[in-house]
Length: 459
Ligand code: PLP
Image (cartoon, rainbow, N blue to C red; front, side):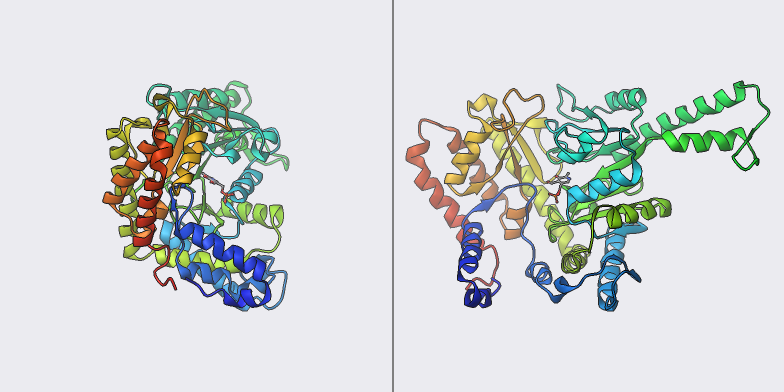
């Protein structure tokens, strides 16, 4: 555990809260799929002197003096990030995942353009076009659902929708989708739709009867060229938000979106195990220019260079072979937990998981997501209630919960503990016996917490 006693000397009140939160985390099991346990190096980098420096702009193009070291740090983060995800360009400045998504939308779209993302109930994120967010307010948002029988993405239906609505931006990626997403297939669909658009425009010009066209300067311009220019103004861009699966992508345990998407966003704090923050990746020079302008000065001021230093540490860690071993354990634990839950007759949506998260539909257990979240918290297991696709409950109650294994795997839990956790989740669903059982369940959780300390060097 990091020594925070310096804070105690100057601000006892905040120090006590820091220690209280540390103890809560140490004595509870974190199954929130979007959280993780960062290394102490990642934590410490965030408290470094880089925090003091203003550095508006980008490496070697700053609006402040004194940025020599900051430039080296940010460039290191960019280089490591590009190496990790095998891409040409990265912007490591977004303060969060939501801001990375906002920057991409501001870079590509005009107000009123059509965007298409997965609905919240099907597992998408708020910033993929949900009504209360900038993405739902500024743009015409069409939300796709998973298939109503399989609860998985239906690529045939996607093709119909993309072809029908021709969105300016199609967003893949999710916050609560337990299966691998086929980015290659989506690229093929978008290419097909964009080609149809091109052919339509080209034929329009050919059929117009003109010999050729002239641009604003009077230069002759071929039908092929003019059709391409017109298509560029309306074609569908493909964005992937890999926030949840970034760690799996980095280690080859999930298909990478980089070869297929025009632009990829991510957070750095979920499976990737870095500081809270966002990144934007692309292979296109034209796209990175637009993205860089959209991040700064578009939506942000000075970058958080201490967080960028911590991102560099995180990318360095993720490049090591141990990180791949860790990610494999996350997936193995998740599959083990899903199988145990299925044995307790839980409705594990899609029948299992390919990644670090599980979605449970609790309706066959006679308990809501809200109730189970509260009972699990009483015994020391932290989860979040989650809407399931086509949910019949409201968002504050929900019929489901989402479980993730990234954080508990960082603590060292394995398949044996997954079986115990599944049995505790099952016990918590039994309304008739929960009150008499809860002390015993809390003790079992405490034993696991003691065996797997949050940080090894606990004093
Ligand atoms: N994108 C996805 C897929 C997410 O799941 C989340 C958050 O959970 C975000 C973006 C937003 O990230 P942040 O909370 O850093 O803004």
